[in-house]
Image 1 (cartoon, one colour):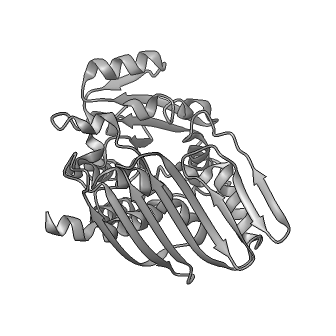
Image 2 (spheres, rainbow, N blue to C red):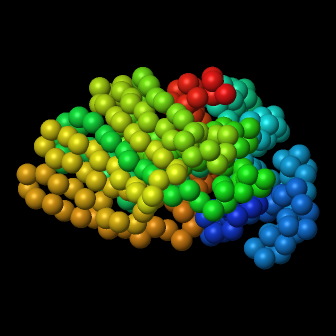
Length: 331
């Protein structure tokens, strides 16, 4: 059923919502942010006042059952995504959930089933699917700028961040019970989702995960190989205790290659028999905004469709789970 406006509520108005997502709900036509929630009421109140949001809560259930909220953006750590998604669906609310979609593939399936049963849409915040940079790469592939795609490779590694060195006060991103795994789940999920967007679903995966540095219990290095339904091959290496920061993806075809980063602002580089061409893009100020625009358009005018839904989000959880299962089986 089409609606005139989408009225949003945010569960978990933490740092990610300050600039990346929160303001977008208010800047998009036919969209309005009407309520926010955080367990610490004073912080929820502060957010609401600073962002001119009319209502705030310290209880997620109350926000979900607010009759003025049409859609719920779940911006908590993955450990509570399933719970809030199912509650929102049962209340008849549209769901937009942060990535990774849940702790594991099984939880994703439960979320999809709950939303299907309730007849409500389920969207996942893999916002890069709507960015000009990745839409350009998709266009190049569809126009066969590199011929037939043969394989994709990912190399992403970084220095250990200061916050993971304090074993008594670890961030939730390296606590598997909250995040599903370590930084691999938080960061590699973006890349694995993008290659799904660009090249289609992955059908088979093999991987190895380890903890080499010993700063926390979660894995800190993952290597994986995979094959897409299309026949394209892929390989990825992720390490979170290396000596520098590197972020490089290459899609290699029969007539050229495309090189790009997942997180950086460096140009997309196309190299083929015609030469080398670079494409530069400025990331949007509110990185969620282009994807949220597709959600609002789908729900109001019906023009267009959001490219990141429960089914695609669940596929990324499945791929990550396959790559780390050897590690969590042994600890």
